[in-house]
Amino acid sequence: MEATLLICANAISVDQRSNTLSLFNILEEINSPSFPMVVPYMVLVAMLTRGADEPNVFADLTLSMDVDGEVFFQGNLNPADFQQKLSSRLVVDMQGLIVPKAGMMRVVMSRPENPIGLWKIRVNNIGPTIKVE
Image 1: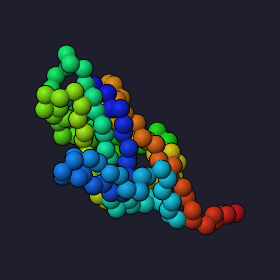
Image 2: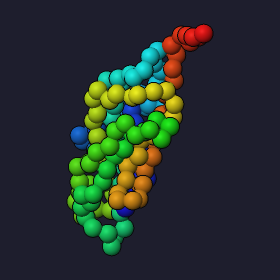
Image 3: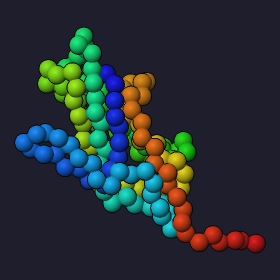
């Protein structure tokens, strides 16, 4: 199994008639005047594919987030159920995410010992610089 797309946004919409997915406000960059900072709401979308010889359900998915290698979130995801198809999508809603510092934030979806998808978000400190003497 692999993630052909892993992306973070502020909101999504799924059209019930056509089952099409729309993303709104893709997160490429976050600005904050101080740290730690809170991201009030974020949606992770993963478009997944599997081989015909692979299982129909993957229950071992994890999600981790780090800023410049410092992990600040790690957890298990709900199983990805392909429902006898070769592609599926996984949507994860997150609220109140605390980001500890500025830097390059990585959102990584993995199976045991095997990253399958990655999204990067630049986190900027836009606060005043205080010089201590």
